[in-house]
View 1 (tube, helix red, strand yellow):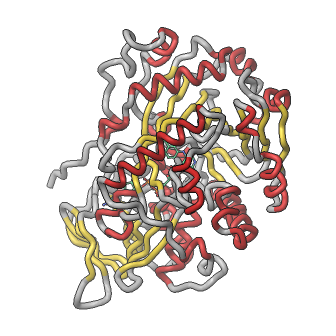
View 2 (cartoon, helix red, strand yellow; view 1 turned 90 degrees about the horizontal axis):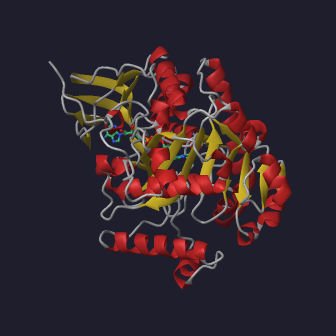
View 3 (cartoon, rainbow, N blue to C red; view 1 turned 90 degrees about the vertical axis):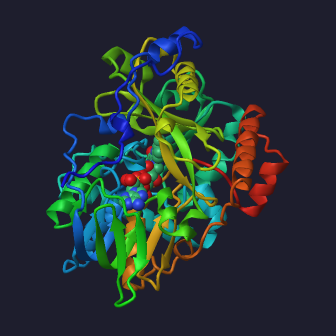
Length: 492
Ligand SMILES: Cc1cc2nc3c(=O)[nH]c(=O)nc-3n(C[C@H](O)[C@H](O)[C@H](O)COP(=O)(O)OP(=O)(O)OC[C@H]3O[C@@H](n4cnc5c(N)ncnc54)[C@H](O)[C@@H]3O)c2cc1C
């Protein structure tokens, strides 16, 4: 039987420049003229051939739905922790095609979307959360080494750089709190910041040498896929689970797919925002926020030297709307973030991968930050969906009398945290007790978003307020202060 596949937008061929040359600054238009609208990380000649789609009915001890980092780690750790268990993984398109293959590759130890957010929400648990996060990060590096996953895992730490004085408020306090939690962190003045990575914009910042590694996310996903296959996980690609239901006679769950089904004792739902279509309770807590990224051509030795990028440390700037930037193995610069876009109604559409206005804005901001790179071209420009929740870090739960466990809501910091989440999913499905399983972070939920159309209104109002705060030296208006008091927010 020939099985039709879902459209895969990252393989779409370019037919027109991403930015209209008539309406953009000429430097910006030129820089984007040849950019391909797909993730650089997945646009590699050695991308794996997709596995066959599922055709027929199969059984398993564990069915994992979703082949991003959460699903891949869950499947691999299931085989490591319970070697007797038979594991099937269903992926709607191809492994790693979604957020896991499109991100910045900052693999953070933080399980709480940063220390500040963690201290606000889980103050008593932070020492334990940080210890478990550091252990998780270390084990990601060890796993990559053990399975020979060539994902350029580099434990560089990271830089947080301020481009305006108000962005430096609170950095001294953050450094003190971070040191108390075991981090190695240094407060930088303008000269210190420029000595780490040269831009005329920097007025100061923080340098962490702990708590973060840089990875190539596409290769990490593909390497985990290979490790899963070698460990005996049966992976079916181009196989969306279209429904999930309890089997009345027996204790299992059935996941239906277009051309078959999986009958499994346990199900790990690792499908990001679309998981809400299989389990409605997930959908109340997550919204799809689009985040956009540019990738330059490889820099010449002279241009690289003009940046003075010490120790290849990943970096971000400190506005509420922030950029993240890093070097690749072949000395390209990835530059992403700033616009965090919510399309009213929460639609996830193929055409959203390309957003010319955001690409032009990002390119202009790139050259304003690094004027010494004028003339550099971007080879790739893409967008991807972040599963955002109102507390900015993953939440977990079970359904169908504990036979289904789910995780979502990483809000832009899931590269590292997805492995921790996979451990939690297995704890929940197997009823394991541990300090991890007892965490408040693991057993509490964020506040849900209101239903549409109110949801769109609230999110767009919050985005507008955030942009205003950035234009207004960080001053937060009444709306943002009210959300802050309620412990609610919108981030990427
Ligand atoms: C542009 C961008 C930049 C980012 N930068 C960073 C960063 O630098 N550091 C960081 O930590 N995080 C970053 N993130 C977030 C990070 O990528 C995610 O948190 C992480 O990849 C989430 O992994 P996941 O497996 O949960 O979700 P995904 O990678 O989205 O995978 C979910 C998978 O489930 C599949 N699926 C959905 N529905 C079904 C179904 N019904 N049946 C079968 N399969 C299904 C999807 O096809 C998809 O492959 C970024 C995200 C984006 C978009």
